Amino acid sequence: MAVDAGIRRTGRSAVLGERDFRWFFVGYATSLVGSSMAPVAVAFAVLGSGGGGTELGWVMAARILPIVLVMLFGGVVADRLGSRRVMLAADVLRCAVQGAFAVLLLTGHARLWAMVALVAVWGLGEGVFLPSLGALVPALVRDEERRPDANTLLGLARSVSTVAGPALAGVITAGYGPGAVLAIDAVTYGVGALALARLSVAPPGAAGKAGKAGKAGKAGKAGREAGAADREHSTVADLRNGWSAFRSRRWLWVTTVQMGLFNLLVWAPFLVLGPLTAQRELGGARAWGLVMGVYGVGAVLAGLLMLGRRPGRPLAVATVATLGWALPSASLAAGLPLGWTVAAALVAGAGSAVCGSLYESTMQRWVPAEVLARVTAFGGLGAFVLGPLGLAAAGPLADRVGAAAVLAFGAGWQLLAAAVVLGVRAVRCRGWDGEPGADAGPVERVRSAAGAG
Image 1: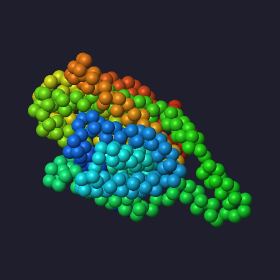
Image 2: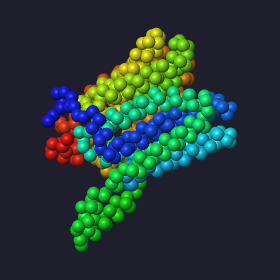
Image 3: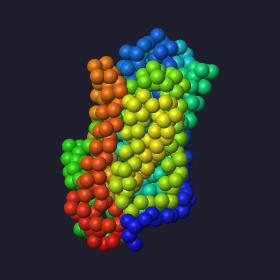
Image 4: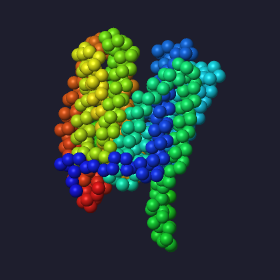
């Protein structure tokens, strides 16, 4: 039955009844809280050791750069070995890194070079974890009707962690020091690893091997030879296949370009110039903390409202939701009172939750499972690779033309970009059950012809 005319409802938390997803959700949500606490602790660890803004910038860059560098490799490995194995290894690695970092801080032996090195390894773990996440959900939740709720719950956990994590980190850092926070973070990664270890997700190709188990002779030999040939594929060939799957889907690369330019022109300047504007005009750090806290609250509320709801044209709704990101920058640029900026942040946070949930669900619906991690990696790389440039350029550009002008340009750009993306038929008409469009790959055409979903 088509759903374009309205919204289909399902059980709001029925997906939590699935054992594997329930275990993963608990472990992932726990590790998210620790992950959102850690940046606060790392910042105060650097400043407490005598470092300043330059040193803090080095440490921040040491985390971000490895994520960008290894994300594509992480997608290849996840598609070869299975997302669960890669994520388990990443959680174990990050648990060990944060544990070692905590020991150095608690014993007073942390040096800047050691912080940079540990944070870089932490970033490596994140870089291989992120592409695997999107590919794991379809393996955990076989029922496509429930996947939107699964993605909404995971997004809800991320939103809650962005509100609770920094607040907890501030209290614990003030009372016990940053080392205690990183020790807690290590424990939360351990919980995430234990949850992943309990999952019963089959490795890639397991179904095919099981189907061949009862066959003998040439058929069995051919299956083994095919499996050996698959394993011999080079990393370059795997990346080429992933890139082909990514670029052949117009809706996918168009929305990725939109997100990449959003991070460059809108979000990065907002993160840099927002605190500066708050310091000068809105009352300082407390006002900025309120703005970002309410942003998280908006994401939480929207995540709750999204449970059990599935718009018929998810990408169109997701793109409309991105309009909310223009509001906080516009409010700051116009010099509006704090209340207006807080309200704008609430709407923007809600839009982020809606956009993230629907985008992930669409990816899992229309991208074949065997390339999903690689496609996710290309999408993540395209979305975030320009972010560091935006962070570095926002301050100098504001010195030349003014912070208000930079923020106003970002707000205007976001409105224009959303309108352009909505004009792309492959985005505007993409549905759960309808015609996939002219850019569909062969897998999508078969699904559509068979009435999949």
